[in-house]
Length: 244
Image 1 (tube, rainbow, N blue to C red):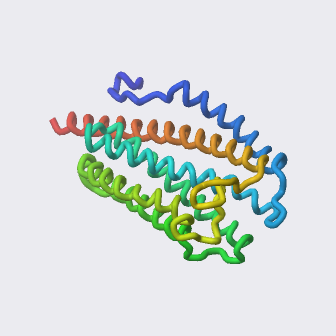
Image 2: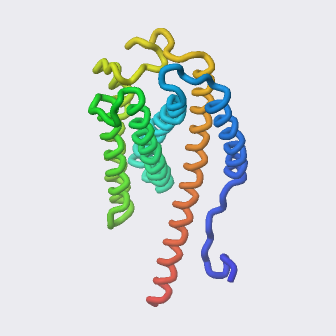
């Protein structure tokens, strides 16, 4: 039976999304070449240093994702549009995923650089708090109850939770941690450089590719949320017809 005959109209994935997926596949191949072949091996840490490119890129995208949650949570409270709530919720899930990658690759780096898997230094601690804050945000969205009530509560929680993002970024500067290096700049005022030229090119390229990955995942996540909403509305429509 065709969709129109049963009244179920599902959203369509845009052509732009498919185009970005192909671009992403090509750029990811280039990024892997730059990381594992083109970039020099770090003298002290050796090949373990390669984690750095994915670790920093994941941290950047996590910050970006939670920034999107912050912006669209404010927009939702102002406009009460469900699409804004969908974008915020999807972005939070992606942000949690990339924060988990940061918390996984960090200890691997730490074991090689600091001879320990974990230490309660400022950046690691505030990053772990960030992970649990947005995990709680997702739990709020999945509670039972009317979506508008959950969306309002999640939006307020998402706005408050974003306070931890600049704290994570500034932690090694405010508390003068000796463990985490300052990559862009070697002093609290960000003067000087903390990375060699070829490594910096590779890092910036990886940041761009992982950002594109975030955009593709966000598009796919929103598409899935719209599909779930269409199916949910259709089920309600069928139930109402059966009740008559």
